[in-house]
Length: 223
Image 1 (cartoon, one colour):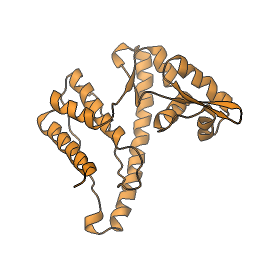
Image 2 (image 1 turned 45 degrees about the vertical axis):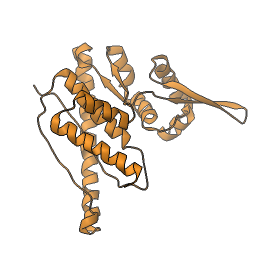
Image 3 (image 1 turned 30 degrees about the vertical axis):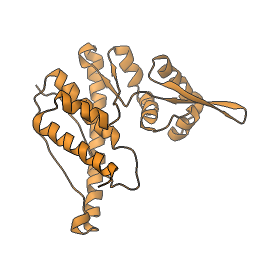
Image 4 (image 1 turned 180 degrees about the vertical axis):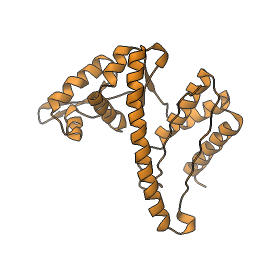
């Protein structure tokens, strides 16, 4: 077993231990050493939520967050099929709010190209600090996103069945499905979300030498 495989196995063992024994401080620190730090932006005011959860701005911000490299306004506009001037207007609002940052500049044929990135891996909102109207409106928007994610996962399941048919037993990969109620304090909830999000972020980098899996993760407080 080479060093890369050994480190991967060590991380798997740590995750299994955290699931079996609970994520204690020692295990949490070890996981943090093994994966890059997950950074989330928690929106705590109505104004912040309205800025980020505007449907068009969500597309712009999502493009920056999903990108592994900083992007120019024109690159984002090309991905969205829009005019750079339109995207630039909204990018400036994100910059002013500290949600996007200038990563670098390049001189391209005498024109200074500015590349931006988001320092955050995910955007979340703190329900306890929002007005009821804004919280309900954004919750409905998230419901739409969840519905879309479920439909996408169903499509990936169909792809999985086709994949299984074309492979012998030893090469079929794995299908895992679990649903359960979790009992956590607010601190434990935050710790759980951060750990899962960090692991998802680590394994989201495309790699042609690795197997590809589809994962759907969602959680909602019910009591």
